[in-house]
Image (cartoon, rainbow, N blue to C red; front, side, top):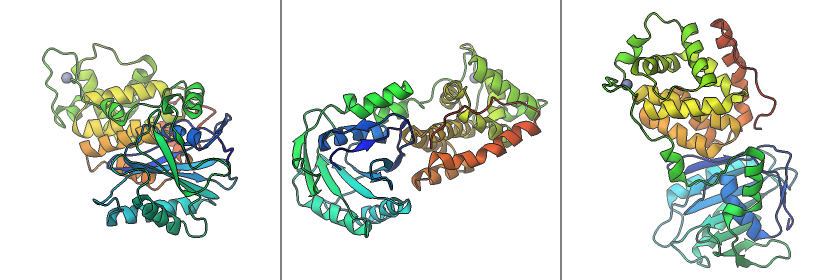
Length: 376
Ligand SMILES: [Zn+2]
């Protein structure tokens, strides 16, 4: 496997409190790694951000040359560098996900700056993973202190063909995977996790000099007399034409009431696979920043769903965390969050599409048709 060819995806990975699951989606371009250092440098592009103090598992599908799933989890270690009981349970869970889809091999990468890359504690962790992977076993385990240019990496478990067991890391930001990802998607994926969280940070509600917006109060009354069909049309209009920079309080309250109506929200989910997905993403992000409480949760759920469908597990996780922080009772956000953590592929969400189009139909509104290519 010293010349691993991998199909890059449109942006993978995860969710806060350390639970991180990333996906590789299908894409016609391939990336070839010359040596293990290339593979390690590509990990941030696979995970969707630069991981720190993390365990990353790269799971090869039945073909043996394509990474099917990438998983990252925070490293929860005791003072000797040994996995805590909670970490052991999580490793067992991650291994179960690995074994689910005809996995042909698994590579583990430890990123940690608390213990030496040559410390014996890593053998303990790799042995734990090896045993959890049953007959498949752990193919190779690498350790690096930081995902940064010039950092030494070490092969601590198994071997990678004729390549040496150590080397120096290239810049992950210019790795073949990161470049391929940027070329195929037009997006730079290597933001820090903090930058992703900042993209959902609260802003002022509206441009009115005297804004009287209060969480969960006038929002519902603002839309009295406006039926669901009209509410859906108004949101679609904003997606297609953009949100006015001087948007007023009343208009925002109507939009909030709209996305909080389940039939309207269900119909809006269809935008994630349409040609106007980018515009929808911008609007959901903007509304997430402007709304509070249940409204913020609904906007962040739409945002999380859109990223999940696209295969960007990292941003999906951030948005869903935001939704659940704003309203822990948001059932759609909870469902999506569970699916993401369980490693369900974005294509699973396509089963919801007919429901979305049916919801729009029922409201007598024609939604933009699905675009050709969607994440697998
Ligand atoms: Zn306002």
